[in-house]
Every structure is written in structure tokens, then in C-alpha cells.
Length: 108
Image (tube, rainbow, N blue to C red; front, side, top):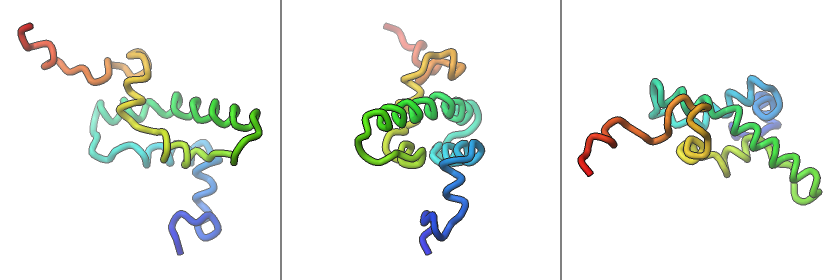
């Protein structure tokens, strides 16, 4: 029995359809090595990431090409926490991405 087989695991379908399941699926792609503010920053990327998925889904449905993507497939192929942080303005993440105070302590 494969853990990700929808026929064998009834909860997997909810991860792509149910709003709470989608949030749980997103959180499973957040690297476990992140803690505190860094983890909150990446967790705050759920809404913009899901909106990008919905945009891609709409484009694909309108074009009539290919199969309908799932949120899980989108996260596996197109979600990179660092890239997502760089893509968003500082207002949505709370702080400037990849800027640490030590970056400005070196003489130029």
C-alpha cells in the first residue's frame, strides 16, 4: 500500500480539495529546518502561492491543453521557499527577504 495512493488513502484527496487540507499540504512542503520568524515568513506565503496555482489552473482550463494540475503537483514542481520569498514584496512577508543586519556591517 503506497501512502500517496488516493484509492488506499482517503485523506489524500482532501489535501487537494479542502481548504484546511490545502494548508496542511502546503505546510508539508515548508522545510523542517526553519524555525521562528523564518518559518512564519515561509508559512505566510501560502495565500500568494495558492493564488499562483489558481491562476495556472485557470489558464490551463481555458486553453484546454494537458491534464488538470493538482495543488500537490504544483508544489512539487514549482514551489521553492527561497524563490517565493524573493518574488514577494516586503509588506507581505513582514521583512526584507534574505537581508540580515550583518550584511550592512562591512565597510565598503
